[in-house]
Length: 167
Image 1 (cartoon, rainbow, N blue to C red):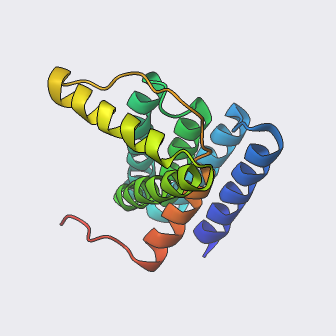
Image 2 (cartoon, helix red, strand yellow):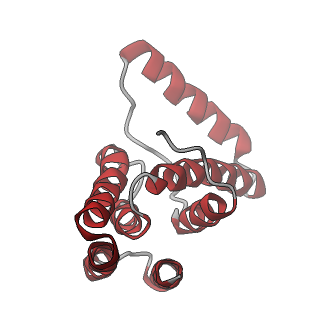
């Protein structure tokens, strides 16, 4: 139960700073990562600390390449790092998959709402064709959509509909 309270505080903090400042601060990431690692070590000993550490690393490893390409902001990568420490491994994998799916749906809805769906679909097809031809992704272009709501949905969906874990 304390882990769920920590997750609620993390998401509420991220939503507040995203709404007010369009940022996720380093201090937030460090504080929430430490708050995720400490109880994991306290209640789970070395295995709990290792799972939380691997979760933080997995969250960062999954999002750092997207940040390097300019596809997401640094705050989104820091949020994935902090979430990984809070939910630990292997649960972070499900959170990230649900987040990616929720982010895609949100991007689709925002582009449809703003009348840019055709342009968005052309850009996505262009990215896929570029990737198929050159085996790498081009830098991102176009408007930015905050990912914090997608992370929120990812956490909620992983809680309600957990993805199967590897043995």
